[in-house]
Length: 123
Figure 1 (cartoon, rainbow, N blue to C red):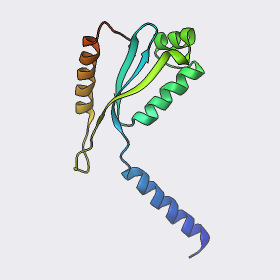
Figure 2: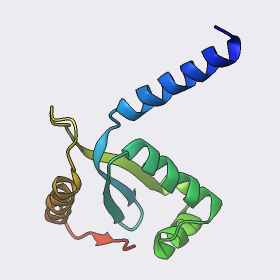
Figure 3: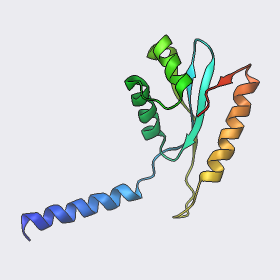
Figure 4: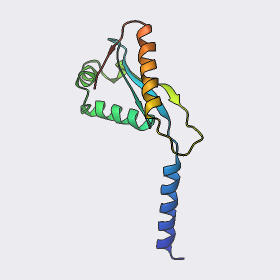
């Protein structure tokens, strides 16, 4: 087999492995420790979305204007990025977890509000 075909086969194999990967999904928050404001959301790929928000904030390009403004005013050291809870995958191959994730988000919003007054950043 020639080298080009070996590379193409390996690339196809790696794509399949990537498609089968199960990335951590669940609820995360970005909390401002200075004014106790927080952004809470869910995602099927928490690592990527947290990296995306952090990058957007550092570049001054986050679409949540109030969050971006506070990041600029207080600096990155005033914020905590936290995975609040992960949702475990079912054994089933193809499952849509959107509804479960939204329920988790509502539960966490309620939990956070019980700890004392918290103001949320809104999309």
